[in-house]
Length: 318
Image 1 (tube, rainbow, N blue to C red):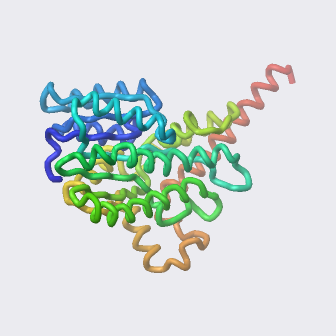
Image 2: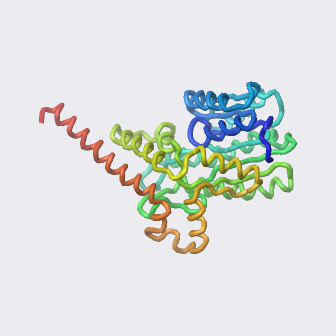
Image 3: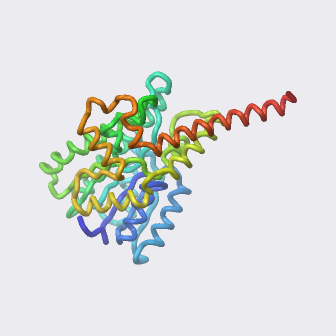
């Protein structure tokens, strides 16, 4: 599908990051776009940017509040999308929504683990099932599922467990690859692509704090805000650049879309020597920016704790 003009596109997680940029760039290309998110305020900003970018005033942009991990809510979202566009089909589905959490089976809660998996994989599953009939009803259609480099490398460093997110992203990758054959047999005019970004400047850290199932202390929340800013600012690729790579991949009908030089380098390194992929230090060079952000986060957390202790001492008169 080389031309998006006049096509109907659906983007989950369109309030911020790559989702927002996909909405804006699709609208700029003349597509009608519906997006969902948990933040109505963020979606309103996305919609404003998309309408400003659209080449004509008749490009339709609609926003819908929806939790992608809820199958029933996704069915409602689908009905609202079809109603907004006055038809029975969609051409493009970007299952993009995601958050992190549930890093360790030992130290993180079951709720945190399940929430991460249910959004990152459940959102892809329920999104695909909800819109499948509408995609098949189109003359041509494309499903684009966002996995991650953690869909082929289940780590963010040898000292930081990353189980729920990695398990979900591996599941997204496997689901999409299996979907290629399923579609070829049953709906050959519908294509599927899996997107595997490296470190992209998004708000996933902040969104994970806001919408994950974990209660944070004020100090932890302050440290998370600092981490969100660092993750965004230190990224080697912006969300806008990532969205361009993704859309170019769809136009080129690529089923496997790596996003970022770090994603390409890590993919090559894992394939070249998979037995060493989980050895200490394997990803240090490839993810130097994330490591730097992690170290800075630790300093921010220490500062937050120190400031809190100083405030407590002042209140106590000690």
